[in-house]
Amino acid sequence: MKRTESTRQRILDSALQLFNASGTASVSTNHVAAEAGLSVGNLYYHYKSKQQIIRALFDQNEAEVLSALAPPSDRPLNIDDLELMMKANFQILWKYRFLYRELVALLIEDPELATSFRDLRHRGFSNFERLLQFFAASGVLRPIEDPEELSRLTHLCWLISEFYISYVESGLGLLQTVEGEGWQEKGLALLRHVIEPYLPPDPESP
Amino acid sequence: MKRTESTRQRILDSALQLFNASGTASVSTNHVAAEAGLSVGNLYYHYKSKQQIIRALFDQNEAEVLSALAPPSDRPLNIDDLELMMKANFQILWKYRFLYRELVALLIEDPELATSFRDLRHRGFSNFERLLQFFAASGVLRPIEDPEELSRLTHLCWLISEFYISYVESGLGLLQTVEGEGWQEKGLALLRHVIEPYLPPDPESP
DNA sequence: TTGATATTAGAGTATTTACTCTAAGTTTGT
DNA sequence: ACAAACTTAGAGTAAATACTCTAATATCAA
Image 1 (spheres, rainbow over the protein chains, first blue to last red):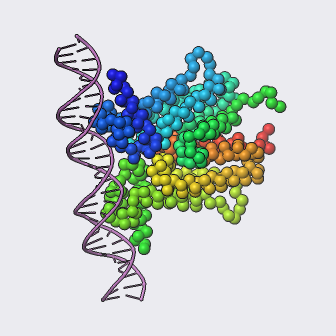
Image 2: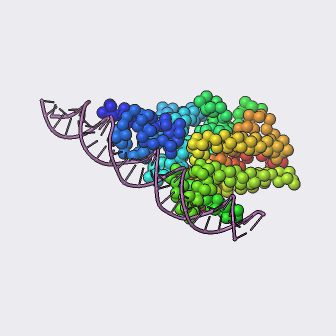
Image 3: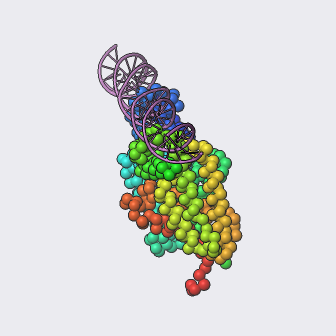
């Protein structure tokens, strides 16, 4: 059972690496098997189609996102937690960047995946909206009365989080190779920029 | 020469339609030829590869974007122009949505296209940044002293413009079929939301 | 008209791709 | 020990894909 787990994971790791490097379209199952150093038959024993591999990577991504964004149960959230969550989120986005980069295309090609993904994300969105609402109600942010405004702010944060990596990869975010850390800091700066107008007025300030 | 133009265009139109509907990966040149109602040989007479078709669609998109975003030469820009530009831009983004949806993947698959696209967009970005700077300097927006802040605001607007369509298509932007007009209005609302903190203080207000 | 060039159709091909099958090892439970 | 279940390799295949070639027709310039 250990070997199984390890082979399955090796397939996913190789697929992830190749997908990130070259995109799902130009990476075949044969390539993945070769990269993982095992036979095609073996690969198909563990995953019965290329779709299944992609779905498995979606699942793996989902699990990592959920664990990274799980709120601490022992104390109330503060604004630094939010920043840490965003940071962890960026790491995961980068690890699975092919997935976000080709998101819509992948969902079009696999309608079943699409519905489950959309369902999951819809819940995530609601959670995040409630989180912001909570911040606004508890004084971490200034109050937001208009529900439309709250919704917009949430959409904005989500949009940035989900597509900032693609924005960077598409070339405007940063001009050099992207392996450095600057892109992360810049992404966080964008999110802060959006949140900033909602910080409570500082009583120390004149 | 007229016939040529029309066949060439028919190929592009069919390709665009199929790409938008199913993604570039699952649309073959044979499909495009069939959809356009002409032979494969004919298609390859006009475009010598699938890449060339994609590049032609990039070019066509570029031309439309440039013409939609050309500033009026006879009068100074005002804030309503900005809104009209955004609106026109959304229309074009929708028309060529496969292109933005698969942007990074397409650039990875065609490095030559990548460099020219990035070059073009870099210029576009600079122009837009100058436009915002001009607004800030001329009182349409409040002054923005920090160049970093101006840069961030520009990046933010650009990111939203470029990926909002994908955001909608990915399912969170709107839940129903996307053919309606609501998504456009919501996208504009996001952009306004980002710009709003930079509107000059209203002297009429208390 | 005539000859050159542009346009079209459609059969054909080399390669690739996703996937199957069979048979041989390897674990595991009892 | 031994059989059942799990895991692996690798040859093989049907279909699809991007693209070529040839030859027929249309257009145009002189």
